[in-house]
Every structure is written in C-alpha cells, then in structure tokens.
Length: 91
Image 1 (cartoon, rainbow, N blue to C red):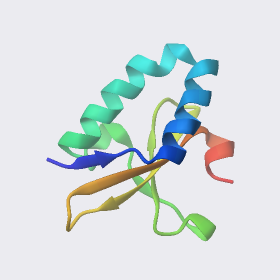
Image 2: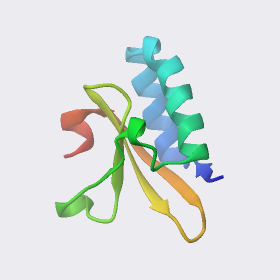
Image 3: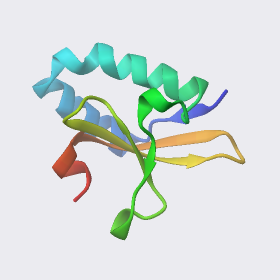
C-alpha cells in the first residue's frame, strides 16, 4: 500500500479546482483510493511526463482533467503536485 501526501500547494490548487468542478469530488475520491492501493493499475492511466515535468507522472481524473504527481516506488510514497485541465497541468 502506498502513502499519498497532499502538500499545501496541492491543497490550495484542489480547493480552487473543486469550487469550479464540485461534481468531480466523487471521482477524485475514487482515484485517490486507487492510488493508495496501486498507482500502476491500468484504470488510472499513470504515465511519465517529459520536458520540464520530467520525473513526474500524471493520472487521469477524467478525459479532460489530470492530476500530476511524483511516485517514489522505493519508499511507496506518492506526492500529489497539481490538479486541473489537461492543458493547464502540462504547462
């Protein structure tokens, strides 16, 4: 089982995001629990990022929205970094 850290910058971004998209809270809860169990399960669509976000990964919240994160497999820890639209998260 993995531990999922939610640093303050992520929490601020999530509050803003969920003010605009309150309907996505239940989906986020499902993704959050799935990350704790196994971030590599295919339903999450975990994929590595390149460019200035190299070293980070992303998972699908929905088709249009993503969550960026770092996965430290040796420590079994996940740190959530950002949540938002596909274009905003990958900037």
